[in-house]
Length: 323
Image 1 (cartoon, one colour):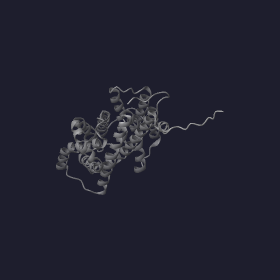
Image 2: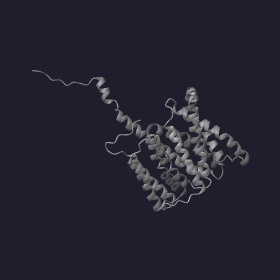
Image 3: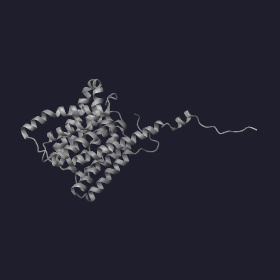
């Protein structure tokens, strides 16, 4: 009579079974990428309220310059050592890093603060929602296939943004500040497209620290001119508080989260999450400023949220793009 005994798996077999599959790793990375993009989007939404609040008391160039000085102080304890360790690598790719600093640090934020002089915080957030379309355009030029589903979702979200800006009409009358914001959207989309090509050998914190340093240096001459012609600003809770928010959270925290999101899911997919920004800005305006959304605002938000959800999901059997 033959006894049949149960065979226990070996330690190697157990470790292999518990090891995450490539598909599971990809899904986990995509989920983290969406969360990082969402964190950056929510924090940046608050920055439009803070930027608009500073517009009447701090000249735009001075506000942006101090924003990056505060951001540098916030990230220095974590990033100074990686920056020094990778100084030779950064020197080799200095042209790329300088271009990213120009679009993402110096130009983008200066344009946003300039826009805050002549347009509302809500309009700033809504117009910035155009940047994911530009990100998707950059992705397409780079050879990435967007797919009909994502394009349709983008179009639905764009429709919601246009109706929101145009107050129910597709005919939009833009103020000077709105035009500054469209220029800011183009600058931010260019920065996000550049992140897709960031050399892998550059550490994320070292890259962030370097762009902050170069961006502040680029702004220094304009800051000196502004200080000479316009004078300084009073250091009061009403000026220091918003500067601390945009320096620590909107600059250091949000840019780190956005860069991680780009690395994990790409600029086009992160841009889809960015479409939630006008919704976040509108909700913050309602909570902090007492502005009522109304039926039109709610309907437009449904379009924006619906477009984001539709564009960010994949159909059954569809594989995520190779990375």
